[in-house]
Length: 391
Image 1 (cartoon, rainbow, N blue to C red):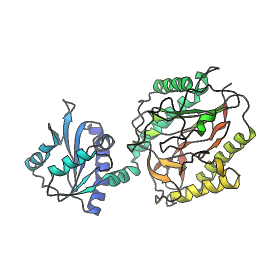
Image 2 (cartoon, rainbow, N blue to C red):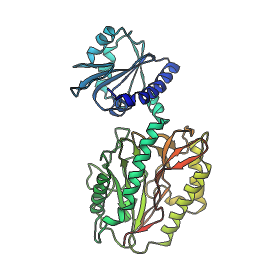
Image 3 (cartoon, helix red, strand yellow):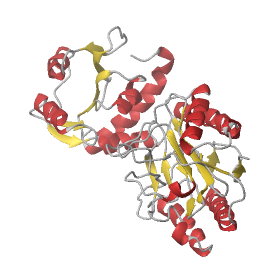
Image 4 (tube, rainbow, N blue to C red):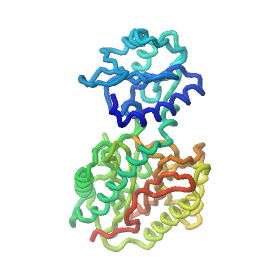
C-alpha cells in the first residue's frame, strides 16, 4: 500500500493508535473515513483499514484497481471482511471501534451487522487524538505547506487591480495558490463545515453572520454556500481579510493577512495592533503543559483591557475560540476556547487567529500556524503582519 521509505512513518502512526486502543480495551478499529485512511496507509482509497490492537494493519480495498503491497486484500463489499480475517488467522473482535462521528447511519448499521458479536464503540475521538501529536514527517509536510503558503501571500498585492470585487480578488488569489502547488481542496472535520479554497472578506461583509463555525463569516454568493465573499466592490476605507487555506502537501497550514484600500480608521489600526500584541504575549506564554483555555483567556483579557471586547472574534456574531489545531484537516485539536480541556504538548500544530471586526471598515487581525516545541512554540508562516496597502 505505502512505499518502503514510508514504512517507518506508518509504524509510528500504527503504534500510537494501538497503544490507545489497548488502554481503552478495544480489540480492533475499522477505519473508512478518507482522512483516516490516508493517515493509516499513505493514500486515499475506497475501502477500510482494519487495525487490530496488536499486529499488522490490513487494507481492504474496493477501488482503485492495481494497488499492491503487504497486507492488502481486495474485496467487493465489506461483508467479505470476516471471512478474509479468518483466512488470515485473525480472531473476530469482541470490542470494535468505528468512526461514528463521520459514518452515515446506514453505514454504521451495515458495519455493525458484519460483526454481530462485537460491542461497537465510537473510535473517532481516539484517532483524532492520535493525529493531534504530529510525527517529525508530518511537521515537515506542514512546514513545506507553510513555506509555499507564505510565498503565495507575499505575492498577493501583485494580483490586485483597482475596481475589483472581493470575488474577483479571491479568484486571482486562488489561481496564485494553485500556481504555488495548492491541491485546491480544504479538508474540514464535521458534516456542517464547508468552504471552498478559503475566504476573502471585504468591508462590511466581514460582519455578516454565517452558519459555519469559522472565526469569521461573510454572506457568500449564494444561500447554498453562505460563507466568504459576496461580490462586494472593494472600496477605499475598507480592509480586506484574506484567509486562503494552505494545502500544498495534504497537510494544512492556516494564515490570514489584512490588506487595505485608502486610509482606514484609527480604530481599525489600533485593533490590529492589539491583535499583534495578543500574538506576541501568547508566543511568550505558550509551551507544553499550558492549558489551551489559558491561551484563550490571555487573548480575551488583552482585548478587553484595550476596549475591543465588543469587536473581538466578531461583532454581530462572535466565534467562541481564538485558535485550533491543523493537520490533515483544518480543524483539529487543540481548540483554544474558554472551556477547552486540551493541554499543549510537543508536536501539536495549531493556528492562532485573534481577529476583530470593525463596523463600516472590515476585519483586522492576524492568523499564523505554529508548532509546539519542547520549550515553546515556533511560527511557521512568516510574512508581513501589518495592514498591507493594496493601492
